[in-house]
Length: 133
Image (cartoon, rainbow, N blue to C red; front, side):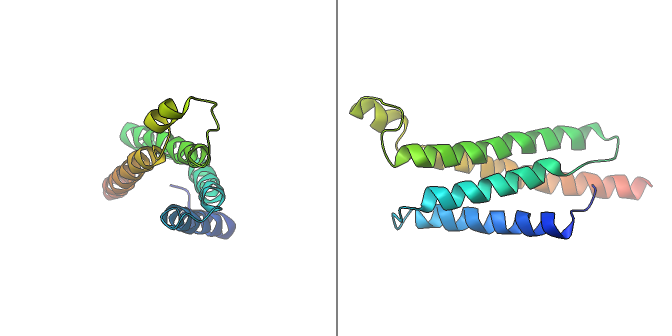
């Protein structure tokens, strides 16, 4: 993997911290938590999608595609956080409660599991590739 520049690394880390702050402050019902999370998710996802793999391993390429899906789930989580603050989709109240309210937690959980899996596996695959060289 091509290493990140100083600016990319800073945006990556700040984005991750903002996502944690945004998700944690939803418990306190701070009104700006969707903004904080969404800004962090966009920064994190953009930098992660910009990372380039210069090798030929099919497994690493597949894992990077899964990571892109996880990034999109993080951005979808931000959208669902905004929808959670009000009936943004114009649904009836009962449908809103059944289909939208707090479902951002599910997409966040899926994204976190995929991030954890792909990060671990990419590290192992890159170690294997380095040993072969």
